[in-house]
Length: 76
Image 1 (cartoon, helix red, strand yellow):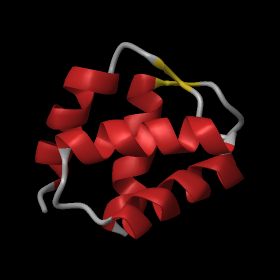
Image 2: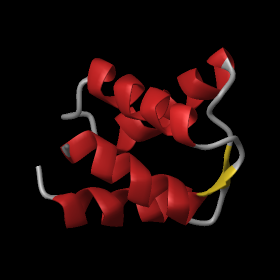
Image 3: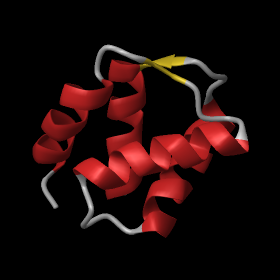
Image 4: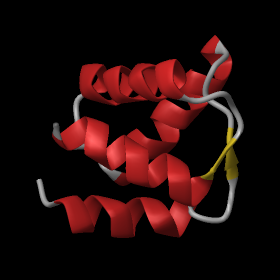
């Protein structure tokens, strides 16, 4: 999957939001939002990338920062 395509899709829905992703319910709703936009990405990959972000940063994150880090973690 192409990095720029993922960023473009996520920027449309998450770009202007504050992203909370530490609590279980926040992670679940974030997963649902990402999965609705990018159903080809597996649940385990999405949750893994979110968990990696949580180990690096405290919530909330700006949408742009979250998307940049999420895509890097997802691709690598």
